[in-house]
Image (cartoon, rainbow, N blue to C red; front, top):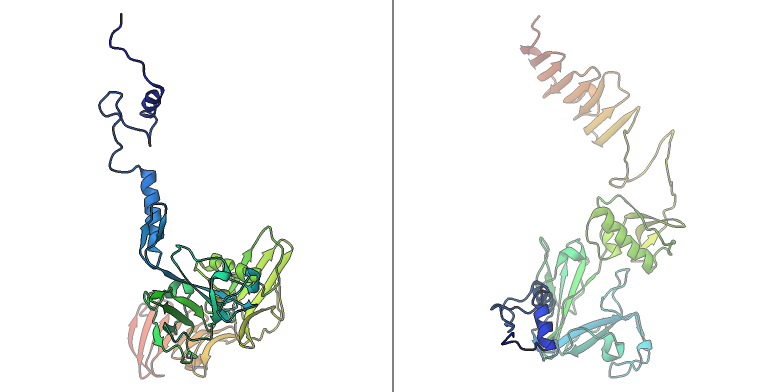
Length: 399
């Protein structure tokens, strides 16, 4: 007869099975059926989730507490929203229906970089801003909030939104200058940052562009977007595609299409063809226009191409061929590649080849002339040094 045996309840069988089921199981440290508590260090997955929650909490503008159900702000938070138009706006600054609000959102500017005409304010203890436009008190963005603290800074740095930071934490090499809200924004400013504090509750910095820079070293941006047909030039889809194309081409984190600067050229290939755009200023607004003349493919010119400017990275290929001259500079302050002169192919410092302080003959002879009569000549296997036209040094073949 077997003694000291007892029936094992179903729940204990289940616990015994969980002891061998890997991470998250209960642990038996004594070899018996009695279950021990979990270790003080949480499993890796729980630790990951806690870190993720901690990261989210740090992004809030105010400390948070746990009410036993979820994390909530310990103090009230000021949220700012924007709109392009409002209907049925009451004297209390509120609208009765969400349909009374056009282009509700949290960014202060349009895709064209124009400040929205209406600003909404909401004080709440929610971790997230409300998506209901009827929750906000609306006012014109031209209105200065005099009854509360309203601060403004501007930056003259022509940099990307992702690089400028904010007045409290400026990006590398970025300078923010404080300005009274009622003062006109300087014409040299590219960015403006506003911050509101109402009844002791502050918003985050609201940053928006007030000027479009000039495109530099971008060249022609070419991109392919498969699975889509061409949008309309200047619509929201085109501007979003421009940002994707620019980011993919340059590796820079563009946030606004105007950050490419005036003169930028973008070509995007869609399923039903290509769409070309060049960013220009039209009536004070950054506007994409179709270039007047487009050559889509190879171009062979037997003659002259006249232009006031060629964009950076716009000419590529195996060679640039010229039967005359390629000149950098003006007057005698020039560097020249000459395909027409009978003697010299390269010269600098004078528009006349034979008078240039530095010149290279067709046969490879190099002359460095410091004053017309004193010069260094590198010719074949000989180095000659002249002073006042008198040979002073000769190295190499002395015959």
